[in-house]
Length: 356
Image (cartoon, rainbow, N blue to C red; front, top):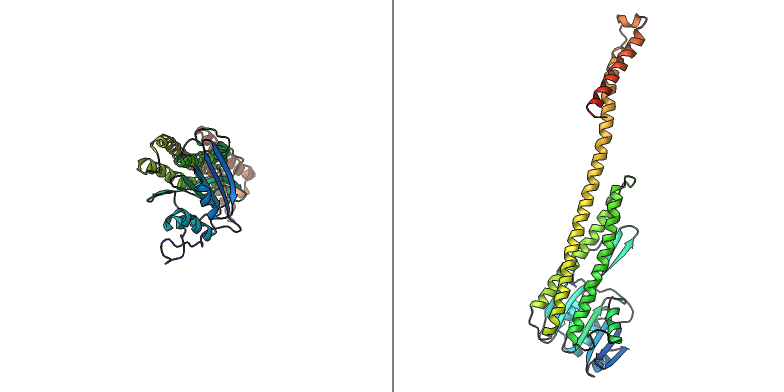
C-alpha cells in the first residue's frame, strides 16, 4: 500500500537543494527534442542540456522531454541553461508532489500525475501513478517524467503530421495539449475501475461468492488514489484560468476551459463510483447479516421445538423408584405421543405465524 505521507527530502536541507533521495530510477536519462513551426519540424534525441539549448535557439516552438529524473546533474544543467528557479527544480526531482501550478517571473510550472490502472493478484485493481512536471517559457515547453513511457504519443503524432492547430499555435497551446491528454487518460483509468465496480455489483448479488468485500476495498483504495489526483488537477486548471500569466494567450483560454470541464466531470465520476463502492460494501454486509439472521432463525426454531421434548425426556429419565408411569404398560408410547404432539403443535404454530 502506498504511503499516505511522504517526505520530500532530507530533514534540514536548504530550500532549492537538488537532493534526489526520494527519486527512483537508474541508468541514463533520455532527452528528446521536438522543434516545430507552421512549415518546419525536427525531432531528435540528444545527450546533453547544451544540445537542447542550441535547438531551442533555432526558433519555433521547442518541446524538450526528459525521461528519468534520478540524475540531479542533468536537471540542474537544464535549469541553468533555461533560467529555471531552484525551488522548481527541487519539485521536479521530488516525485511526490501534489498537483499544483506555480508562476515565476518568466516561466510557469505545472505538476500533475499520469495514472495507469493495473491488475494485481493480491490487491485486485491497483493504480500506478507517475509524476509529470511541465515548465512553460516563451517558446519552450519542458516535460520531466519519472521513467520511459507516457500518454503523449497522440500529441507527438499530431505534431509530426501537422494535424490540428498545434503546429500553428505557440508553446502555451502545447502546454494545453499535454494537460488535455493527461486528463483524458484519467477517463480510461476510471472506465476500467467502473467496469470492475459493475463486476462487483454482480458478485454481491451472487450468493455463491462468499467474500467480495476484499475486492470492494481494493477498488475503494484505487478510487481514493484517483481522487487524490483528479481533484487537485481540477483546481490547478482553474488556477491557470484565473491567472494573468503573459505566457498564456487569450486564444488558449477556451481550450483550457474545456480541460477544466473534463476535470470536473472526472471528479464527479470519481465521487459517484466511490459512493457506489460504499453502497456495495453496505449491501454486502446487509446480505451477510440477513443470511446470518436466517440461519439463527432456523436454529432457534429447531431448539424451541426440542426444548419441551428434552424436558419430558429429562423428567422420565430421573431414576426415582416411585414413578407410576414407569410401570405402566403403555407409558413408553404415551411419552412419545406427548413429545410428538408438542413438536407438531409448535410446528403448526410457527407455520401459522409464517416463521417457517
